[in-house]
Length: 178
Image 1 (cartoon, rainbow, N blue to C red):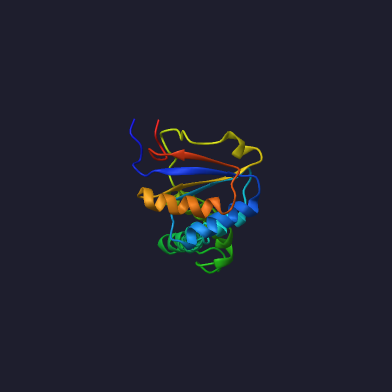
Image 2: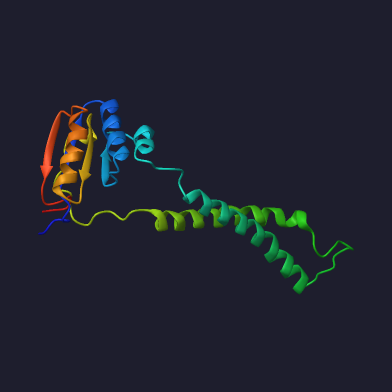
């Protein structure tokens, strides 16, 4: 199988600080093709990679607001379309619609969140990643750096070597070769 065409390397670190220094140094020099591996979720790595706040929260807010509006609108339009005057009570009685609005807020908030997740997620790689260290799931940190050409890759390697990785594994064919 052919690779992605972007040569790279995988560097393995024992300490989080060294991993963060390598990521920050690479991003400072303009490298964006960086994949980080960690044995547990680590927000410092997310910050170093430049991840901001998740855009999914906007989908959740939008779904909640649409659900609340729909939860009040549906029963109101139904009451106006089929008015049942009962004991002199008003046809539109908003307190009775609060439960429906609450349930619609939750329902559409959840549905919009799921839609937002699918829109914003990165689909998994269908081909297995050959260059990987299983110790990333136990006690090691790692970064994979890809570059467009050998010159940029040598520059990235110099930056990472300054952070003294424990092990570096070359990947001349690209991230997804098999």
